[in-house]
Image (cartoon, rainbow, N blue to C red; front, side, top):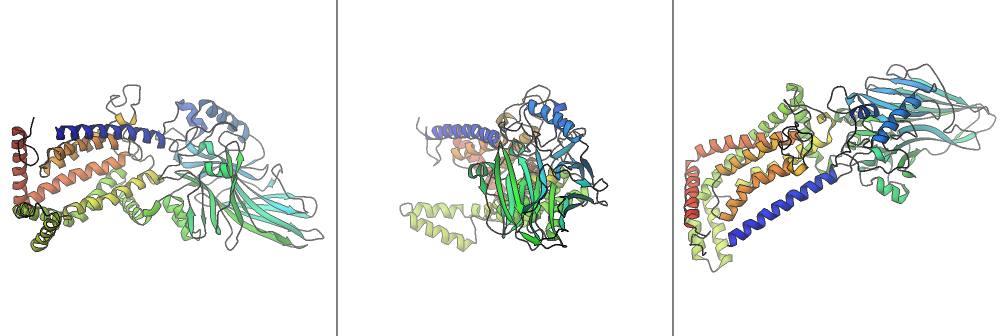
Length: 600
């Protein structure tokens, strides 16, 4: 009766876990509202609801979910980008334009990243003009003391465009009072725009100016801010990259001023970043502020500078607006942008996750398929761990060999538990047995599994990477769900019932590994081991397909490894078979875990 009660409790707890997991996954990774494909393609991946409207629940990658807002974005872009006061941007990875009204960089599309896995889905739009549902833009200007400076309505004059890797563009404006303002813009082969702001004072008296730069955006297009992936304000201040504040924090406070000297600051999504980088050696004032209506701004304003008559002053600021490509960010960090590689939210285990990512990327460069690279990574990890696993199996064999002695000690000191434990430990020492050795391979697997999990959900290199057949995106869940007949039926099952082919393989291979292990003498433990593979099948189904590829491969290698090691330790195999026979015999007789007849 006790075993039946315990089993019932275990089943109920498993059910609660499945339902709770589904609720948690829906909270962390909510599904977007249905939209038409044409509207999604036109609006871009990072879009927003109209100004003043509620932002809605963010999705994993961010973007518009309201069809009305998507259509409004499309219409607004057609109107805004057709204005004659624009200079085109055309570089290897960025295309867009500069708005000469207000000197705003407010039109950036990333050439090398698609919105969805579909090849015709169009490029990702990162920046959109002010007033559009997806507004996000950067602006450069000056604050003056007793001198006329350009403002948001100023129409600048521009040199010949487009702005490209080989052709900088200079914006200029004369205030008619003896001061000429210039912003020389250049762009590199990736996502970095450099703005050299200068003012020439040809007047009769000195002037005082403060150059500034801002990045503004709506939070409605933000990706989900979860416990393991940050979305929102970000920056390197002092010796630390700050991930602590989200949009709600800024909205509640009005203005947040980080402590420490700023190396860079801006806003991040899971895959995209817009950040301002001040001139080296300067210490500008910085803050994050809420402008209302779900609009937020990162401000960077330099200290006041007096420009004497007949002199010129300049200040250089860089704007990063693009994808958080690990190699690109690390290259900028090596070039002097402090901790720029940590714009990716690696977390506390970056020291371990980055080597895993490096190895995975290296394997990908050799085989050209990230799924195959994950399999090879698993093989390498298991090969490195094989000596440890071999020692673990040898320890298990030794444990089996001393079982009679252990039982004798347990019987002799059954009324003196401290003495019993002392004698058992002495026996372990005498026989050279480590009872924890068999757990070591599993313990080592945990950080590796977590590191791969972070790599899959964080790095843009994994985004939209195909494997084979139906798996078009290893960073997304397996789309081949059994309940909708692998997509033939027009509905999406809830996540805890969205069992795909990989999840079934995971449950099956784990069940096989448990079957190959020595049987547990306790019937309750046997029931738990029987249930666990299928419970994990449900739990892991919503995870990234690449993670399931790793785990299935690891289980297959475990089966092969166990078969080999059993052949090297026949006494362990024989004991395992005997344990199974004893367990079946006890089950047939109705014995309890102590070998005595159970009462009915």
